Length: 131
Ligand code: ZN
Image (cartoon, rainbow, N blue to C red):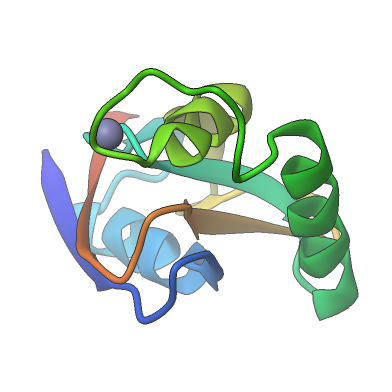
C-alpha cells in the first residue's frame, strides 16, 4: 500500500490529486490491473469529475451547501456534521482501471480530494493490483 499526504489550506477545498495518483501507479511498475484509492477520514472525500473548468467544482460545492446547510439542528457535538454528511454523500473511495502503466480516465476527468473540514493534513491510501 502507498500513502500520499495532502495538506489542505481551507475549510472546504477541491484538490486535484490525479498526478499524484498516476505517479504512484508509475512507480509501482504495474502495467495492467486495478487501482483502489481510499481516504481514511470522516470529513473529506474522493471525487471524480471535471478538472478543466474550476467552476464545475465550485458548482458542486455550491449545491452540496444547499443540500447540507451549515446550520441545522445537528446533534454531533464537534460541530462539523455538515462535513461528515458531505463526506458520506461524495464517498471515501474510488477504483480505477490501470492500462499501459497508467490510470484510464475520461478526457475531462480528474481525481479530487475534497476537503470539507480543513485545513488539515489528509492521508490518501492507494493500492494497485495487477501485473
Ligand atoms: Zn465530527
